[in-house]
Length: 211
Ligand SMILES: O=P(O)(O)OC[C@H](O)CO
Image (cartoon, rainbow, N blue to C red):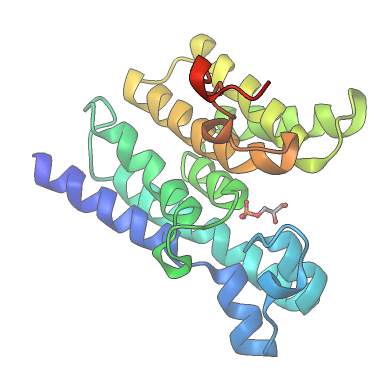
């Protein structure tokens, strides 16, 4: 039934849109990590850095949980072969990345994506791949800064879907998640979001030319 998929999408988006790494430091320590950080990202790294490890780990746990819970419920309720299942999978990442709490400007959606992949356990291949690519680009072929490493990791993760045995909607869901994360990390990785690349200047009409 389509309404069930729509319900899970809304649930996933709402769950993802609660920016724990922004809200918990504010509520528990009176700290605004957006005002203090350079990248103004409402994520675990900034929560850890400015609110301390205990609050940071709580934020990490909640950011994982908000991706895990709606997707785990969906995996135990819906068919992963339905085309709309891909949007159910992407909904928590979309909620975090475009959270209404910050007027559509959310976070980079890394932790919530890991939470989404955790929901597939005991099928660990997706989680293993994403974590493996991160480790590869952190230890073996080191990429800096973190945002470029994230872009490279999610690009490989997206490409790897071709070789995995999951239903097509699951693969598309993973591609959507990768898209969201790459989009949200692009600016800090390379300077501008893909949609903000400068357009070619309008040609100046001959009568307006300054000689
Ligand atoms: O992807 P987020 O928004 O959960 O946060 C990213 C982490 O803080 C790592 O930079």
